[in-house]
Image 1 (cartoon, rainbow, N blue to C red):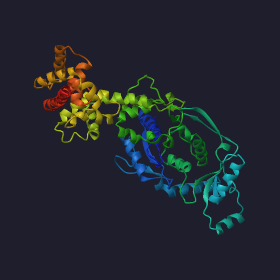
Image 2 (image 1 turned 90 degrees about the vertical axis):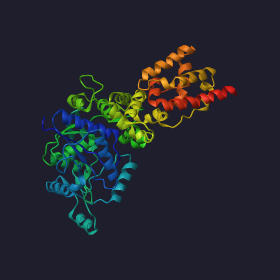
Image 3 (image 1 turned 120 degrees about the horizontal axis):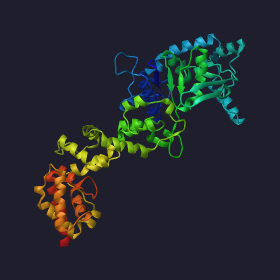
Image 4 (image 1 turned 60 degrees about the vertical axis):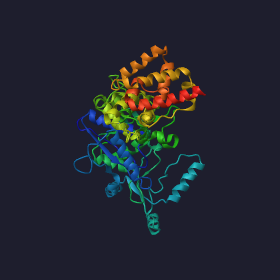
Length: 489
């Protein structure tokens, strides 16, 4: 199957949806598994809704996920995407061939006439469909419409009744009645712009697509397109339709219902790892025969098998995605995580810490992170000049008499901490606990509160080591001063 050619063909009428990203991933995996070619094509013939900012969002999202395409209209690489709007004249030329062979015709219906037809059908509780009224126009009618200045669209004849059938690479045998396709369909609008179902077929023929992998919401489109392939005398590619993504309430994921939760760039901004998104989206509907849960994009390319993609709807489970993301935050190299954390660490600049110091700070907090954006709060106390301690912690932790003893003892030995050795720092604290007969929160919470303003956080030894002697002393002195003033009162 070295001649496999697949594509992702989003419409830039919106931002990159997680479902579109999964479709792109499946096409990419399939192409690489079979040594084939993965192509990017923008289906931008919807002139009113297509926007360049959506195009840039889609391209940036796919590149962030490392789903790079292998071909484009330019030479070399990285490649630009193909764009349908650059082929308008070509589509019209092919449509005229269908008029010549009798499988398409000019339709002079106005928008008002079509709207009235739809309302009549709605009032009669009938499904909306074109009634094929322009299929057999008389010469007199044609002359009349032309004198009125009507500019025709081009419609494709949908013969009824007949069954359109194909073997789907995921769902198996599929049969669609042509009577369910809405009547003769427009393939070129009166503006001269090709419609989706027609432009897709022409492009897939021109680009020699061998397989079309796209969501099951396209099944009826596939039936329409098979008819156009037949009229053009061309064998259709093989089709495969993975099930759509749903939320936990079994509602289809959509911008209308779920807002930014369906937008891939939302996850980038929140600090999700692209490796986690890819890993999760790959297995949300597909299970590798090897049973692996954690695998790289490269490993997925070696294992991917369309026959193992589920026919059932997939639930987009954010908690499950979070599990994957936590794994990659822990597992990726410290250098990579630190680089990716930089946008979330605005206080690092001017803090006096070196890059090596920063890596140690990231290392001590990353095990507790679900998303990388959480690192802002998790590390804030390292960078702020002083710690703000809440009234609650002052009244509950620092007000205790034993807390003052702990802080004084730690302050007294603060110059002796082995700041290059977190475990050694922690050992000295534990020794103080033995001397005072304290352990657990009675020992650690006063120190944590003084150093970070919180009673929970990274390993205490790592906190001390990464803060350094000057910060540790200053914070212990400030907290101890409060303790002593409280006890004086």
